[in-house]
Image (cartoon, rainbow, N blue to C red; front, side):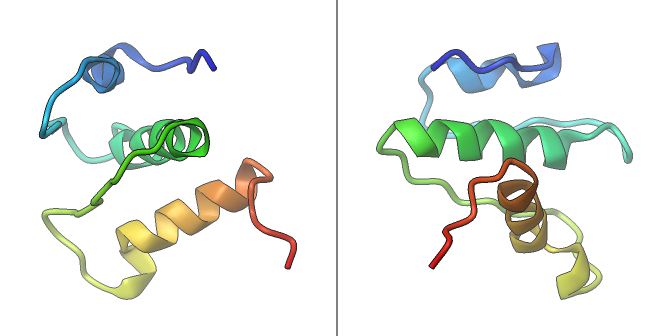
Length: 79
């Protein structure tokens, strides 16, 4: 599966033990990472840990972004 990535997320394509992307607020890093990682995990046996430097509430959590992205991509389980 070929996944389209913005230039700033291209490091996801290259093997590395740790991958970190820096950028300012509102640069869509979290959403871009969420979509790329969900698509990768759907086709590859990978283990992923998603964290954020700042999290004011569970509403703003990485988990929420991942769940919303799974839903948006139509990849939620129907069971």
